[in-house]
Length: 95
Image (cartoon, rainbow, N blue to C red; front, side):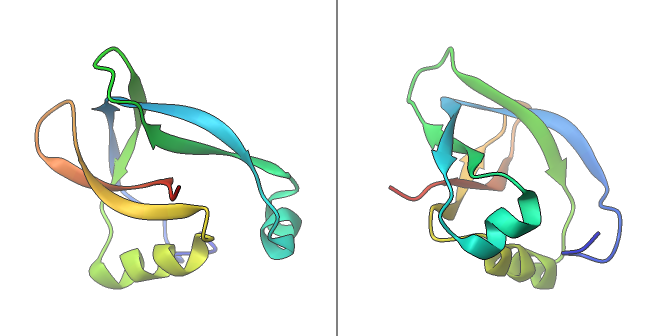
């Protein structure tokens, strides 16, 4: 709500060949907002058995830019294939 000012419509899906790990956050504003020093991050593993299940949300181009502004430099936005077919944007480890 604080980023998009509305509830997003979405559906469950998964990306294959990715896994989740936790990274230390050093941005003081992000820590203040989340109350956590470590956040999950998706990274490419290349292993077909790795899968990250999540929600695919419908957002406008303007909202996607708002999401980019929200994310810190530890994350980058890339296009990935969905298990159900098609593709989506996802924020992954920038390193």
